[in-house]
Amino acid sequence: GGVDVLKGLDAGLLEDTSVLGDTYSMHWDSREFEEFMDGHTKLNYEIDYPDVALMENLANRIDTVYSDYAQSELIRWPGIKNFNQEALEWSDDVNAYNPTVAGCTLPAAMCCWVKDRQANDNNGNCADDDCDDADPADNTDICYTDASRQPASPHVAAGYGVFPGTNGEGETHCHGLAWVDDPTHPSYRFAGNVLFYVSMYDHLYSRGYTQNVPGAPMCSCLEQAATVSRSDCTEPAVTETFRVIFDGGNVEDIIRTNLDIEYNACDGATNNDLHSELEQLYDGQVPDGVDDILVGTSDNANSNCRQAQINKVSALLTDLQNSNDND
Image 1 (cartoon, rainbow, N blue to C red):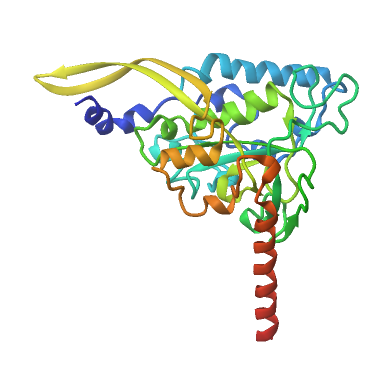
Image 2 (image 1 turned 60 degrees about the vertical axis):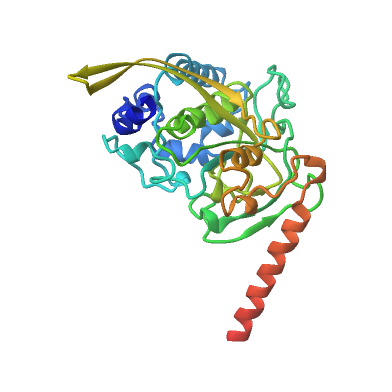
């Protein structure tokens, strides 16, 4: 059937041209882009009004990638440490597109932002000439950070940051994506597109959200991220048209003639919620490790952060006691 044909030729379908590296001066696999995903570089630190030319140039580039490529071409998964990869040169190895095999341990990625640097977009509280300490729209409770999850991002081998009380960290915003471990599934094949949309178009370009929670990368595989109550979520809606060429009753080739990608809020039991999306994708049972990062509840005002913090501190005290006993 059609599904079997697609599975048999999925590697060929994945071998699209990398559009982001060709279009961006800040290449998807570059050290500069890696620093951006950590929450650094001018792309995070510059605010709306001091350097209008920089902001306009950035906006034009992101808008071009979104308009010309992100809705009609494959954007491959980035080869940077935030996604558990060494920096990769472009190759025909299909694993370069694979966010599970060549990237994340958990089948999800997440970004969390602490600053709004763009006025007049109806998101966050940045205003004209008043963006120095502006905040994004709050949608989560940051419980704690664990630098050992990705030491290269905070540039320390280990350490913790605990944010006590409801909203002790201030206004923060988290948004992620999830995928099924199936090379033919749209969430898997187009995870790079959704990552671009979430990190660059929807939040940096459209909302002006920047900078990381101290002690954690701004955008990363879920297992590297800060422990939080919840996260918003985007999923791809993909329409593809193929021309199948037969030779004597055998499939000789499949040519994709059209690709259209839309970006929608995830439709799990709780709409626009990353944990609910993972439950839906994995038949009601999230993969092991997800609950260590997304502790609930989906109602941010009643988060489970306090219990998660108590559990983490108790574990640290136990480790410290064991270490002292062994000295």
